[in-house]
Amino acid sequence: MSQPLRQTKRLLERIIAVRQISEDASVSLFVALRRLIEKEGRQKSFPTLCFYCNWCMHPEIDRGLTKDWLTRISKAMGETPPSVWYTDQVAFIMSLDKLRAELIKLFEHYKLNPFLFDSLTNWHALLRRLFEHLVDTPLRRSDHIPPDSAHRFWITKLQITLENPGSQQPASNSNQTGKFSLVMDFLYDDVNGLYPNTQRNGEKCQAIMPLVVPEKPEAFKFP
Image 1 (cartoon, helix red, strand yellow):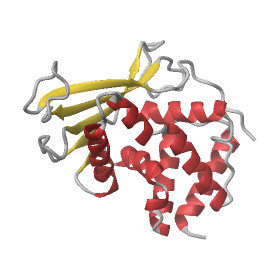
Image 2 (cartoon, helix red, strand yellow):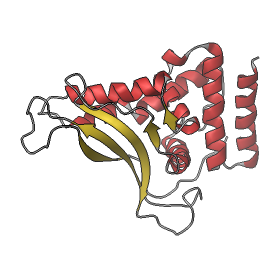
Image 3 (cartoon, one colour):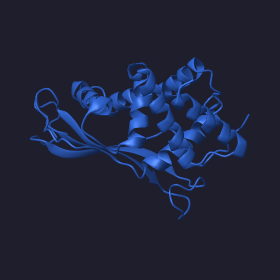
């Protein structure tokens, strides 16, 4: 048994033993899963999971799968026809359903207990812990290439925000309530004149997408 797999099993056992999962525990789990996938050389089998794992670990990127991921999102946004809202493409690529499916696939492969996401209650609670961490970890590109004919959109930053918090406690507190959203900063150039009301020449823009997570924290159901 590899060290990353042993570490992952110990983390899950500890979570079950204390019957609580904190923000730190959730981040530690995603870091351990990233090391496990990397050890086995299976990054391409779990692209969505790797993206979120890397986000936890590296808020600034200039290489690797995460950089490729942001380029892919930028390209998809640029290829979106005017009849389709470009944020729909982003939601599809960064799908939380895909993240959950890849986690289930990985846990099944290694025969790990999937209690953290085998029910919607636990899945939403785990997402809230993850997002609580990402609120303080905006993902920035270290290279800044303006849009061109190949990339009308160019994402420069992704950030999770917490709107209308239900308390004044830090976002890392597990009792924090409110709506999570994904905020994208990007450069945009309407090179083909598809959007008459939009400026050209690399205009700085921002888009906000609500994330489908319950506003109030849910209690985990432990084995």
